Length: 309
Image 1 (cartoon, rainbow, N blue to C red):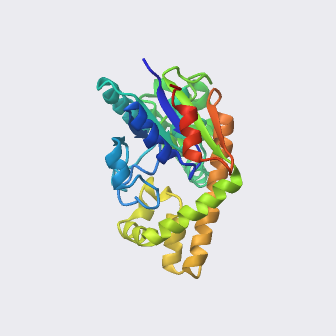
Image 2: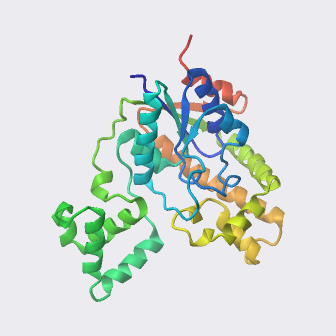
Image 3: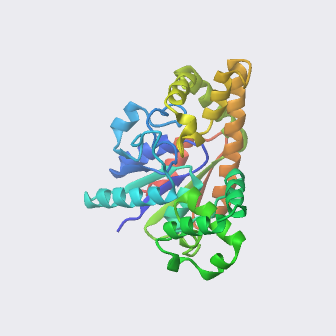
């Protein structure tokens, strides 16, 4: 079977446009590997493909959930497996594209690095320290593991490890031992490429795209989503930029739209740096595609990904 293409990289690295070109050449379909593009009502802020792009090539896992729906790595893997099976059944290849590192690594390698959240950890620690708290956390982990007998004994004997296991289960929908149950070798069913533009080029593109998103109505979109309860949702509230816009709208953030835009640019550059580091170090076996300023990005990417004729 021809391996599916996995096209990864930091935000604003031409992934979506390149994926469409590649899919058109291969008569393939696109599967999103993005933790936030699954949500309806966040089209601008999550840079979802527009109507023209969606019409050009079949896309999957884009705008399929309301913001109230939880989404995690486990749910992504289940949905991606189902979609890939359907795509292959039609005799087509899949192009998997996105920038959510945990999801991409879980898909390609069969496991993920264990995430952490300081606020959640402190909440769980308070539960652990309260009367009956340890029993409560053990029950929660038993539910995630589908039975107490499936929990490694050393975790039940060590309160700190119990705490960490529940934290990971809440953040990912999986137990730590499920996430770690694999090697660091990519699966043969995927051929992965990582786009790595030079940082100054990426910063310039982030500024341009942020300005375009603001002009398109990002603030108004955020206002509607916040009115629909975005800040109280289990997952969608983590979408980059929306919390900053919420603070601006409440009068507790930047004093003007230009200041808000500059803050959003700064947040996005910081996020892109983290993505850059992740993809450079967490994807052994990938083909890296550097994009220097003088190159034509889409042509460079497609020439590296598409088989030579």
